[in-house]
Length: 223
Image: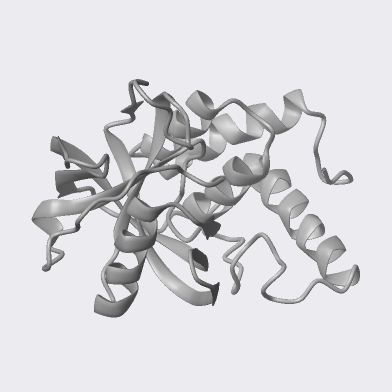
């Protein structure tokens, strides 16, 4: 997942009213992990400034266009995205950055602007975080299946950095369980985006449970 770009100049001050955007072929969920390998100049510049300032950037799902920018191509993206904060950063060689990001708060785009060299910025309003909601009894199998998957990954000796899910696990919370499954399931991007945008964590988990049934993942199964 490496968005492309040409050279651009970022504003000296990054503010929430001019949030830099990172269009991707994925949907980032709150508390989700996002590793990125960045080598193109508009994002090298943007990520470098965000890292230095301790500022977030916005991840939005691409509806049209390519992660690697194509000359003359049109980019369109979802109007709901998620803030990403940089948790790990390395610059192993000139022109290459490796970052590990975490999703935090969802936002709704109210206005966008594309800068001269292709970087998108947006004015945004912030969406409420999911309220804590216990997993209903009829959806417990969904949480149990996720717990078993995490146990299987741990038994394989994956380090904390290699795990696809950030710890600690919150297996008793509807939103957390639904978000983690939505990240892992091999479903189309529009489905992931619609799940991420839902206000109700219980409804999100209901829909994820339906997807698990479709993929025949249950208490005794793991992907």
